[in-house]
Each structure stands twice: as C-alpha cells, then as structure tokens.
Image 1 (cartoon, one colour):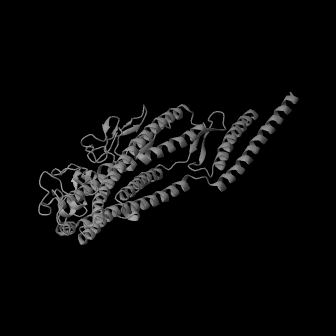
Image 2 (cartoon, rainbow, N blue to C red; image 1 turned 180 degrees about the vertical axis):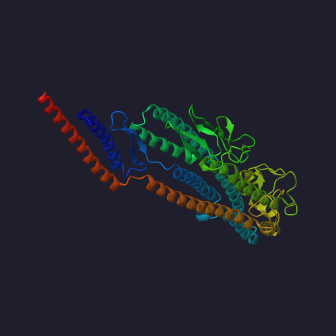
Image 3 (cartoon, helix red, strand yellow; image 1 turned 30 degrees about the horizontal axis):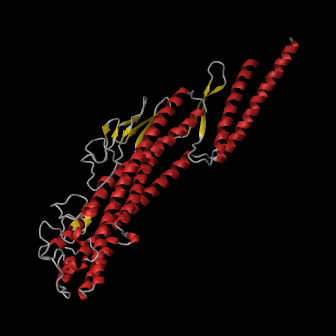
Length: 484
C-alpha cells in the first residue's frame, strides 16, 4: 500500500472513530435517561480508496416488544380510566367508604315515620317525618346529579384526549418530514426517532395504534382497526364535539352527545362501524359515558319510580286521586308511564307540603281538607308497611325481583361497590402487565454501561493507532521530501 493510501485509510479511520466516540459518549451520558435507547453505528467499506466510512447512526429498536408494551399501555390506561370513573360513580350513590346515603336516607325516613306513628299528635315529630321525606328525595336527586357529573366528566376527558391525539399526530408528521430530510449518518436522526417514539406512546395511550417504520425513517400510524392516522401526507384528524350539558336524557342516539370520527369516518366505540375503536382510554370513556353511567342512572330511576308508586297506591291514601301526585312525585306531578329518564333527579314532594307545618298531612291524608283526629295512626303505619312491602321492579337491574325499598337501594349500592372493585382489580392486573413489559423492553434497549466503557477504551486505542499511522506517514513524506 502506498503512503498516500495508508494516510487516507488512517484519516477515514480517525474520522469514523471520532464519530463512534461521540455516539458512545452519548450512550454513557444518557444511560439513566428514561426512554433513551442505546445507539450504535453502521460502517461501510470504501471500495476504491479503501478505509471505512460511517453509514448510519442506529437507535436500538425491538418492534415486536415495543408493540406488546404499547398494547399493554393502552389496556392499562383504559383500565385505570375506568377504575377512576367507577370510583366516582360509586361515590355518587354514596357507597363503599362513603356509606350508602340512599339507604341511610330511606332508613331515617322510616324511623321518623315510626316515631310519629307512636305519637301522631306531636308537631315536632310531624315536622321531622316531613323533613325525612324531603331528605330521601334529595338523596335521589344528589345521586342522579352525581352520575350526570361523571358522564359530563367523561365527555370532557374525551374532548381533551381527542385534542391531544390531534396535536401529537401533527407533531409526529412534522418530525417525519424532518427525519426524511436528514442523511442516515446524522446523529440528530436518533434524537428525532426518540421524539417519534414519545409522540407515538402518547397517541397510543388514548387511541391504540399499530406503528410501522418506513425505509426513509418516517413512522406510519394506523388504528388497531386499520384506519390511517399518520402517513406521508397530513395526518387524519379525530373529530369530536364536547357537549354543552349532559343530562339523564342526553344520549348518543339522539345526538345529545357526540360520537367519534377519524378523517370523517365514524369510529365511535361500540358503534356500527367495522372500524369502531375497541380499546384504549377514549373507548373506556365512551363506555362509562354511554353505558355504565346510563345503566346506573336507570337503576336510580327505577328505584325512584318504585318509591313513587308505593305512596301513590290508591289503597294507601284515599285523598291521593288522579291526577294528584302522592308523597313522592316527578317534579310535583304524577310520573308518566313509563317516566322520562332522570326521574331520580326530579323526585320531589308535591307543593302542598311546602308549608313546614304541613306534617299533619302525613297522618291525615295528603290532600285532606282539614286535620283529623290527633291520635290517628292508621295511615302512618300503612306508609311504614308500604316502605317494607316486597314489590317487583323489573326496570331495576340491580334488584328486579320482590324487594322492600331498603333492599332495593342496598342492591344498587352493592352493584356500585362491585363495579368499583372489579374495575380496581382489572386496573391492577393491567398495570402489572404494563410494568413487566416496560421493564423487559427497557432492558432490551437500555445502555450497558460496562460494554460502553469497554468500547470507549477500544475506540481510544483505535484513535491513537490511526493517529500514529498519520504521524508515521507524515514523517515518511517529510523524509522523502528531504531526499528529493
């Protein structure tokens, strides 16, 4: 080999070694940086002049393991979202640690009626019994309102996640354009790949995706159902409109709340489309908003109707004749058959009981023209029996068969507890799987500091050797010039 050839080879080796030293230094410096994947370099022989050149800076990747971890991420986020809102639904009806407020109110009303039945002429006990009835109606109102608050919160979170996915998809498209414009041996490409992975992870947490890396470095994202989200052009946008208000009668079917689209195509979870989203946090929020909370509110409405009918029975109070409402009413009126959704939220005492001294009407008849015998207790004891009577309520899924009011309300509270406990268990299992896969992926892509330090020593030796070749070649050229 000629002196010039040796010098050229040494210079190329020195250049490549310097680049490899920089990459190795980056690895060591970022060994503890979360999400950092080890880098390596690809070398290529120079065919004509000899020597080597750096072909590309490579970021460690394991597409199969990353896909498994992302699937676990999406499932864990969905499960955690469900668990959080299940706890809020449970709190809305006062179950679990808060106590069953509905059952407590029903028990307090029953106790007040019993005390009054023993002393029916006591004005204070009359007032307490009347207040007990109001408190029971208020407990239903509060429970229904709490359920609607959870539905509204789910709707708000959907809107927030949709905005986040759209912003991240646009950011990913920009990174794709930047990475395509860079040469393969540019160290910045690995940093851009890190950004691609971070953006993809964030999108996947809300909307599960399948990612595919193209030969030019860009990342293409599709939903699990196969619809393109980010490709070569502008990203496809998710479409969702946040509801101005969410009430018991607000449904997806009547357009009161929004569905979900991608690039104009319907992907509403559990919708009729073959591309309907089936997993992830957004899908979990739709299930809570449109199914879980709606079912719980239906149970509350069914229990409220059961309560209304117990006190509207013509055999109970002869003064309650159609169209007059009984002790418990639909905003002061007899409920329609079947009542509109949201009866629990509208449950109230009729206006005739607005007078705080009207407690005697519980003893003598709701619409009695005047007070009767002060010692009469028959109607009061019939009302106590009405609360305890075991009636069917087919529209209460938690307790459709024969049950007293107390048993029915306890069953609704227990269903809330079961919902919460099942959601917590699912979230714990999903998060454990995510943690295991994240650890496995981290170990596969992490920096091995011992190996990097050994490589650093070898590179320093290689650098010194190439420098020595250059120095020797320089001395030989100087010697030749002196001879000439």
